[in-house]
Image (cartoon, rainbow, N blue to C red; front, side):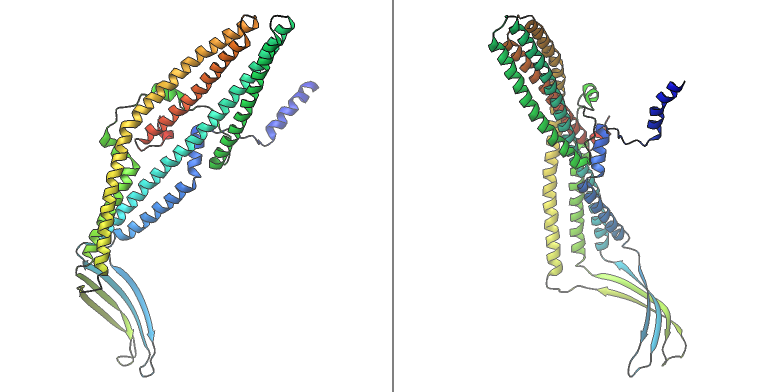
Length: 416
């Protein structure tokens, strides 16, 4: 009974102690965490909020401006006067200049929102690339570790065969040299793993990520759909940004032109004034006015501003056409590239099994003294190349999956 209680003490202590171990993140969780802490996405999001706030102010241009003014005036020759007035000014007619400015600000805000999504897709590409490189480096390190173990076994077999007089010492030395080369390659893989972990830590703050390909089953089951160019164009954030920015600048040029035309404004004020010359007490008063402003000449400043705005809008329309061409080129290229990468990854996975079987067969022959070290090394290198090729195939397939998701303007982690 006492022995049972003593045996339970470590378990109870572990349950009561605070847990310091942290579970490794999944691939998708790591990508989302990288985007959440990405400074570029944060900066672009703040710019979008700024553009949205500006658009809000422009949107209600038709509302009056209201203020409350309190004044007390002194003069050497005039008694002190006091006034408290509420004033309102209202733009009545400006040939649509304010409405065009409002349209420009709204489209600029829409472009800024699209820029946020574009930044998220760009940074997701970078995050996924860093994580895939970590997986590649981790897998490669594991492969070379496995090959080192195989090499040690081969050396032991060769030494036993040499001791039994079945092979020459030269064959033993070949196997030992192959083992040393494997160790050198393993050291290089260790360096690559350190670099990959450092890149992930820079983006994530930690490299505690499950280092395995996350979307293999998804890629195996998903063929590239036939794309609709018009639909893809409508969904891509770079097109939305360019189109909205073009509309914004065109509306700004209209606003600049209409700003050179006459304006009609109304003003109204009401309140109390205490003027000793009129009355010792406060008296109610009000004022109202209509103002027609006809611009005549201001050294071509307004005309120059309109010309600059118009040419800037023309440049934006030219860039819009370039973005359209790039997006449509991607619509034609990305699905085909995905299908090639998907098929290559699946084919390499199938060849890997055959390569492993050939190596195991030749290793068995080597153990029996019916295969030379050179023959074993050829199969071992073939097996190594096939394993590394399978890893590269899945890396390329995952990168193509990301591009396929981005083709529709969606994050890859959001696609199932």
